Image (tube, rainbow, N blue to C red):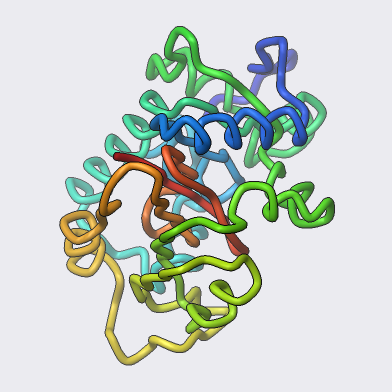
Length: 244
């Protein structure tokens, strides 16, 4: 990453407020139309910027925190970075760090370079704040998105199927278990390392049974994203995928 005395920011107006973003997804869910949200957090930028924009210490910090190790072959990391960048390009909505954070936080200082160097911006894409899920939690906005769904699939390290079903009145909750981050052990540690084998297995297994149902990706390991022809959900780096 090359320091710059006048760092650029990527913040294309208009950027949707958290409530406007929620309402946009609610309409997609009601119409059973595919949509997705990916949030660019400080962890994701370490992988999205591999190997050029991000420093190795940033990428390594991400790998150690999320996957428990950083000693992967360069070819494996390059493929993972490419897949994450493609996920950003294909997203309906992207959560961006605010300009002040892009200017002041070294983990976000190259977001504009990521967009310029890798062509991440897709025409018609919408944007919101990368902390949108925190606003949704504080405003109880997930109720409007999840209540009464016939199905939701959740990629998670927490055994929360019963609680999610009760909280939102969801008829069927399917868990796709993964181990948790090193700093917060979860309920599925015995399934072994997540990456690369479990990651590839999940990519093959994840499915939305039919339109009007949802898949929530509850952790980075599935790609920080919220996809929605169906619905979003809960905590950690919440991602939701909804599709036909």
